[in-house]
Image 1 (cartoon, one colour):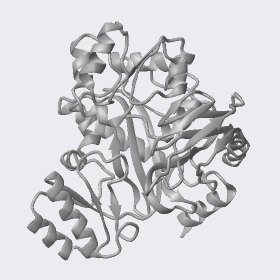
Image 2: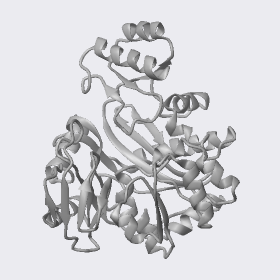
Image 3: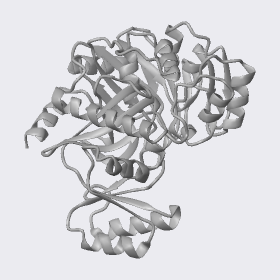
Length: 415
């Protein structure tokens, strides 16, 4: 985001939780603080007389920051606290789909009572997914057959969430191919971005524990080799219906809406909706955005967005460099980088501290390496070449964007 704002010629005032060297490179000024210390961030915005605010991380959207910025007269291209509930409250999202009879919904049930939860799971004859109600950084959802093997294990986790959070969401387990659709929304108009697919499992072949995301891909035609246009259009229709429903309920959605979908035998189904750029898929699409991001954000904030946004007809592959053990027991170290500075191979700095050439890892993701080319396979090869410019003890999923991986995806869809 900082890179695109810089390319737009903006002065950037960045509030961030760690001293990210690439954001610092672009920023006129930086505030290092907890990302949920919204009062400090609000004061920083007022002091620097910013013309526009934009929120990146999802935990910030659960604070009063956006509403407070707007109250102070600062245009903000992110959803209000109430509109952000579409992400911050999974039960709210499912209930909204049901109330407005929006297609793509799946069988689900929420519980506050341990007894009711036990009874429902005991009588449910299919496989299921257990979801915390609120934000978990992409790591709280547990799927039968992947994260727990028996009905009892799933029930134990569900009951644990009720005791901890006061509620839990249970959903049917879907089978198919996942994809992500992100869109700009000004409350009434929605403009889609290229489709993407992310890979959360830590090990090749989509094995191992769930993570915040190990990498992602987009294709040159803005679809995916295994997701056709009709499935993409169905996903966009679902998101537009959600936006219309939110407007009817007095909480127009202005910002980035990101839907995670699954193409199943019975059509396109909605897994969840988020209220910001996807991570990492947002990096893929921003890397090929041809329009001025600042102009788009002002249009979002003012409810006057243009009807389309231009993206280069290029494929992208992103792979994250992470600490050894990421996803279970990460072991942070340090990394040296000699960035080649090529336009078709980019390095983005994630949860790190340091300089452009030397960073200290945290327990989260370290660097996103992005290749841009005419095909997914070629973009993956550019990432392979880019890895030689990163030195240190780190781990990366090398199968993301390879011909073998794409072949497996196509085979999975046919099966």
